Length: 165
Image (cartoon, rainbow, N blue to C red; front, side):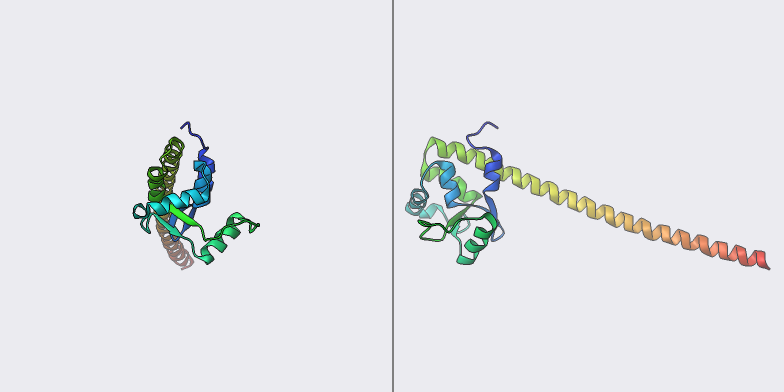
């Protein structure tokens, strides 16, 4: 995959908020090579394309939590509003409102990263299920082995008591 931006860079910019994988407006603006306010203005001009499951604004608590996780500075000239975040569908819609070649190319890479993350999640889920099944089988075997040892002990006890007579 030959892209403008390394996949690892994009992966680090995807966060889990409200049980959804999202990207911050400022991170997307940086990737697209535009100012954050330009990106937000383009979105607001096309608000009908961004329902709440495509884009939402963070609450103050969510922003503070995210700030502490990724060390966003509180420096001067900071944000005047809480950031917007975009789900995978919102990111896909961004290329239609930004309408530049760079936006298209960056979006293709971002979509590939989202797909890759979904595949990894499925793989982890399958592995976790298989591990659970294996644990159950081993537990069943442990119980069976314990039963076998108990039967052997009972037989040995009978044999010993018979030999003592």
